[in-house]
Image 1: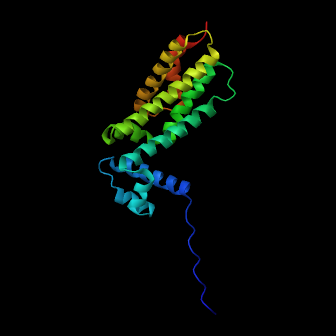
Image 2: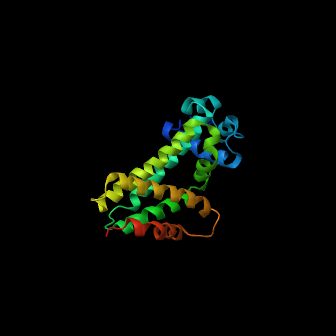
Image 3: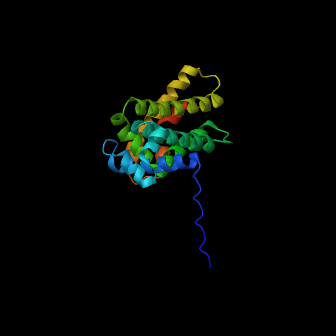
Length: 199
């Protein structure tokens, strides 16, 4: 019987390869920290050459920024999905807060990167994290304005910034406590809802 020829390996689509690189990079950044992570190790674990990673992301900082950006996109999608069809401001705020803490539960590595590694990496990473904060602020302003049409936008922006800042600090506490996402959301609700609810 004649030997069969090996089938040529299919080339992985670029988007799939990029996701694979980001997943591995996030894992190693979280394990070792930004400074102690080497592009060689990331390339080895992914099974590609180091130049290919540079081709995709430009630099180690660019790779970290891409990890943060991917997490930001997932948080945006989760937040929007959580408030679809909501009919009251109170429930919208509660659901949005719960979605944020559920995101942290399912993205502990991403959260660790955002909290601990961005300032070490450089200004691009810091800017990407700030873009994430502004993203959540903008969502909150849009949400608040739909239920509080008579409140000036400047006030809504202030409320939104307060909620985002409170959530970020509470999240640092939350990851070290035996508290559910819903319970964490209720802590914020009890603090801010009486000031936000319409008369």
